[in-house]
Length: 122
Length: 106
Image (tube, rainbow over all chains, first blue to last red; front, side):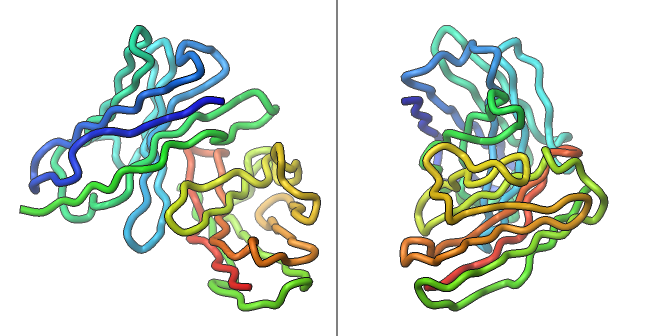
């Protein structure tokens, strides 16, 4: 079955840009049935959707993060990417990549990565 | 932004009990746009219910969802010890937001 795996730095300095990669295996990232998402979970357990990217490169971002977020996709490598700029301590969280499926007559995240903890600290 | 408010915050229950969790939206949403997730410590969330009332693949029938408009519920009919977890509602009617979660302790 489909597997997703996040990779990237565990520690980022304030004001820097976070760059994360999600590698998808056992499934094509080019399928038109899915949107490739980033979601984060703050230490207090609150979940926050960051945005998604489609295989075509079209994106949809959380309005509250839109000014700092960019996503990209490399279908040849079955990977998609997150950049989050101007990081602050409030961005410390577990970052998940997930697949948003449209195949059930509804939208839902049916496969998730294990998550990667990103800490913002000097 | 649509704010989802879940109640109660924490529940401590016994195996075999029935429990209903509440999720209230700050504005009316299409019931198809409401999803419930379960999360256990150290794990990613897992989808339980989509379209407010459809069970996801592999989810036991003791889990059921309902509601419409601004008020939605997740019911666990006969609690099992493995149901100890956080439960989150989530909407995609406008953008995507989550409730703050209900912790269920068995």
